[in-house]
Image (cartoon, rainbow, N blue to C red; front, side):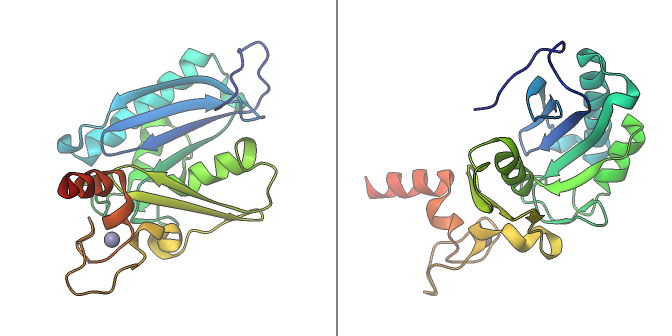
Length: 213
Ligand SMILES: [Zn+2]
C-alpha cells in the first residue's frame, strides 16, 4: 500500500507519474518522499490511435498539476511508464502487445509537447520496481525483482541504484523466458511457444484451469 499525504503536509518537489496500459491510463502525483497526493485514471481508447492517446495523456498531466495546486517550479519531473517493447533512449514505443496501432510512435516527445514539460520514459514494470524500491515493499533491500501479473507477466529489476532496461526494454521481460522447449508447448501472447507467460499469467492460469475442469 502507498502512503497518502495532504497538500499542506506534502514536501516539494512533486512528481507526476503516468502508467499507460492497454485498458486505462493511470496518473498520480507524489511528493518528495513518494507520498501520494492525487490520482486518477481515464480509458486508453487504444482504437483511437496514439496521437489521440498522447494528447489525452498530456491533458491528464496538466489536470493533475492544476488540481493538486502545484506551481511550475515545484514540479520536479514527469514520468511516463509504458508497456514494452519500447526504445527507451529514443522515447518511442516499438511493438507494444496491448496497444495495437501504436507501434513505433514517439510517445515521450508527443506527450511532452502537449503538457509543455520534459517527460522521462520508462518501462512500466521497471518504473513499478523503482517505486517499490524507493518507498514500498523493497525499500529495505539493496536490489529487487518485481513481477506484475495480469494479461501478461511484466518484470522490473533494480540492482543497487540501477534500473535494468536492456535493449528495447527487454532487460526485464522475464515473462518471455522459455520454460518449456517442447515443439507443442502452449503459445505465448508474443507468438512464440513455451514462455512463462503462456503458463503463469492471470490469463493463462484461467485458461489452464478451465481446460482442466
Ligand atoms: Zn512470449
